[in-house]
Image (cartoon, rainbow over all chains, first blue to last red; front, side):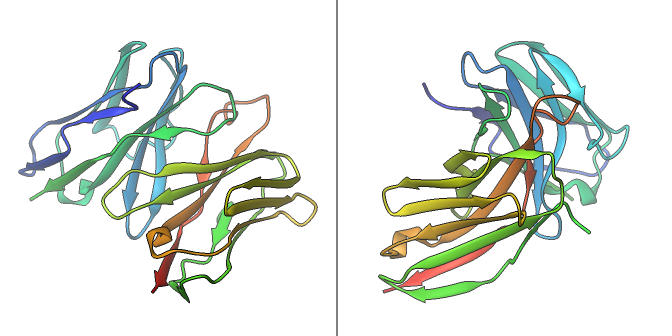
Length: 113
Length: 115
């Protein structure tokens, strides 16, 4: 298996633009997580899904952020409109066993100017 | 107070040293404990996964969990320059409630092993 695949790897956009990050989890995994990592705050959980259903979105910072999982092999995280403070590395992760370890993608480095 | 506390370091050791990394936590519901390694500009990589209290060994790595003290450790024996990375502890709760699958991470400890 190729692991968790994220795209794009890097994104530079102007403030106010819409940004869409994509994730393909490991086949057969039933949990999918979106995290954001910054120097100041470390890794923060934004939202996670179980069997394509959002379970906990309490980490989503604002209504500008939204996430979907239309099927078991694809998820998106959208920011609209983007702001400079959204600049961070966004990770997608998936897991197979409830409470078990999660496997991370390589991340999308987002820069909003 | 954060649910998981981890000394960010940085920690610098000579090659061959034994490294000890630690986290403390406050949430008694945590039952699953993990250690991740993250190289610069890469995603976190799962190193060790343990359930409840006890020890687990994998090669040069040993993970310890002491639930009575709410304290977990990762030991690296015969450390190598290739072990230089950020090490993150992570935890999740047992069955029940919306937090079941959620991982809570420490801030990460930056480790440098110099030749």
